[in-house]
Amino acid sequence: MKISQLDIKAQHANIRDELVKAMTEVIDSTQYIMGPQVAELEKQVAQYVGAKHGIGVASGTDALLVALMALGVEPDDIVVTTPYSFFATAGVVSRLNARPVFADIDRDSYNLDPEATRKVIASLPAADRKRVKAILPVHLYGQAADMGPLMEVAKEFGAEVIEDGAQAIGAGYDLNGKSVKVGSMGLAGCFSFFPSKNLGGLGDGGMVTCNDDAFADQVRILRVHGAKPKYYHSFIGGNFRLDTLQAAALLVKLPHLNSWHAGRQAHAAYYDEKLAGIPGLKTPSISYKRAYHIYNQYIISTQNRDQLMEFLASKDISTAIYYPVSFHEQPCFQYLGYKKGDFPNSEFAANTTLALPIYPELTTAQLDYVIAAIREFTHV
Ligand SMILES: *Cc1c(COP(=O)(O)O)cnc(C)c1O
Image (tube, rainbow, N blue to C red; front, side):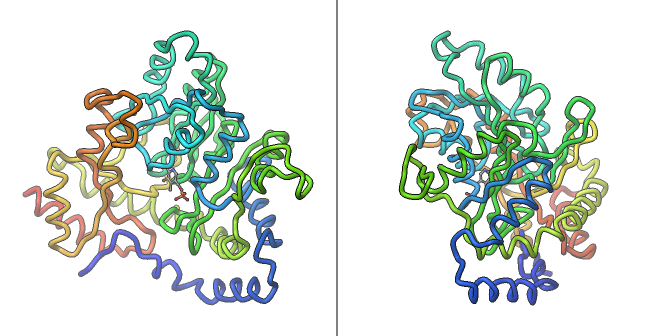
């Protein structure tokens, strides 16, 4: 048996004709830039996450960048975020000449720890504390960050919350007794349609969601080089547009998203049950009450991670390491002055976590094969 980490062909098997038809329609329409499918997708995604506005952009990275620009993040401003995420989360902050300040993650959820965040901000010099424009939590692997306490911390220090929901479209969280979705809580939610996300396009794409009308307007203006009306520029924006072709493909896929989540959740429950009790191996934690985890990744943690990965590869099972190096140990962020040991939970996660295959189309026989291989490796 051969099991890949992700099998997009399997996802497309049932919707390929619809995708081809949608692509053909766009080709024949010639409305490749901001065609009607973009506005339709914006409407549907906003509705799906429970936000008032959706603004399609070219990638998840651009969603984060344009959200920070719309917030007015300026050189020397501070954005507090996690050191354990995909590069874009911190990269966009530096690209605006602002400073990423890191706070450690929670060891069980791998998400930004609210208490660590509060301490990091409180310990900044007073002048810097005033420059904290945003807290940027990532809803990592498909589980919401602990937004209630994080929003409290943001309020305490007069900062906004920008959510990195790239891996978590549809993930739920209980905010003050109300069940809400990622991307509807902070000032903005940022999503990616990179092919490996739960809602993946046929290339790059992204979306900003928000509830604030003025903020939505500003994102829309910055998306087209800061022009409103066309050729009149009050701001310096960029070309952050989502292609019509991508919007059309995503409109075909969106109606399937909940059933794909359910497939991943069923596999996760199966792994949880069958991998329980293996000494030294930790399965994912559901860290908050009534949380709704969409398992963009199913992450196990073990000290023998590298050997386990090699063993599974020898059995034709591909797994992945997200992320082997925390931001504070990346060469490009050395100028921030952090050192190894500063964020022990992030470093622990970087050294011990492994992503197992979790895509919805996996069969029980395939899951059993993965489970048997892990049990063989751990001798239980
Ligand atoms: C994928 C991802 C991004 C970036 O999205 P792109 O569409 O690849 O630009 C940002 N943050 C996180 C956490 C991601 O997983």
